[in-house]
Image (cartoon, rainbow, N blue to C red; front, side, top):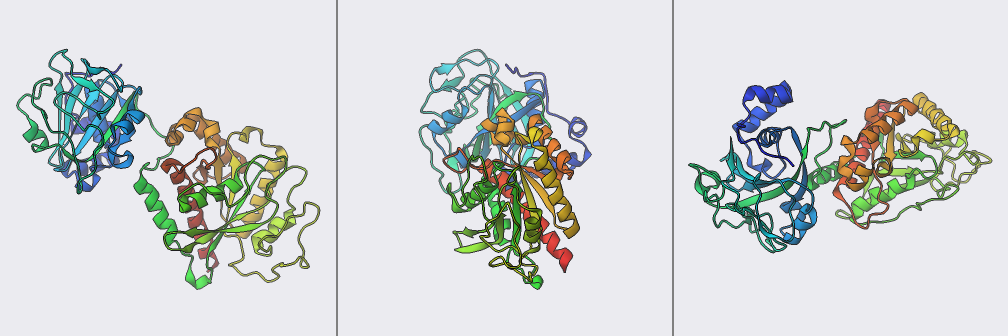
Length: 487
């Protein structure tokens, strides 16, 4: 159990600068001067994390469990996401740019009524945009936290909501009765007026799980928010190749061993745009490749009714005894292979093959190649598959075609990622797997993108979609680089 340090004070600038570094410190300085309203509902800032850790008496990291603007104002949803998880902090983002909340050292529960948490405390982080940290200790051991299935997080002197609460205009009207009344928590010379401007209307409310120890990601993670997903979709949706080259859409070729998840990548990208789980390409387990033909998949944006400016090109999976001929791959890269061409492991395509493009232009060529590699079996990938991938890489080098890797099945690489895909950039197991892939293919680690295809999920999930689209975005940027080199 985490116990707060009642003697701790707010972090001064010297301590913060030492802990986060000079570059991050300059960002915190800006945050301290003017806590902009549009940032209030985002997440805890570094300064906030350091301050809360100071009050708790040790370095901590915080994982977002519940966010009312994302998960809805339902007591049922709050308990579903927060019960039996461990110590938490609840953050209120007041419409007047005040940020305050409460710490619970126990787990939230659906029942139990009033309970006593002697380690609980209330706090203030910002007052009218300005950094103004204050910690309010519990006065005595009387019951001070309420557990009930019909209530959201409820402390004495700081309540949230009961039942279901809807957003009114631009805010949620939380319960303001007994707000910071100095009854159970020592607010000293402060009150509801000085802390919250006399009301409890919030733009957002968040509950974070508190875990001991600071964590450093092995790669900077994205912000796991719907806004990030929408930003990625906006970029990809507005992407267009250079008009001067007369290339209507870029061609991204997916190459991988049988069972690595090439076709599932197509289905995952299509599902994200369709808004529900969909199947454009056969996917699953089989002794031999389920994909036997070369297919260029176009993805349609339902909001506009138009196709996006890229094509995901799927081909037969690589396998030991029925491999795709190197001549076919070379022809494919150069734009000779027609759509729906059926690969023949015994003989490559020739000029006499129906539909063979004898004089391809740049729009027929492959503009970026993505190796799709199963991260869970990279250690035992057959030598003949590794050799084939390296041979293909040599073809790409000659043609100056960019190469990147989508590392799939990261949920099988790490059990924590299986539970929560947002753990991917904190998983040492995934990091080791990414490093191994980069070493085997001999490409920069920044060109290896861990993703999880939609496979067992019945509905879309923000985290899975963000991983897939950030990888796709990079493939589009690489394609753009290739095209610029041709001009």
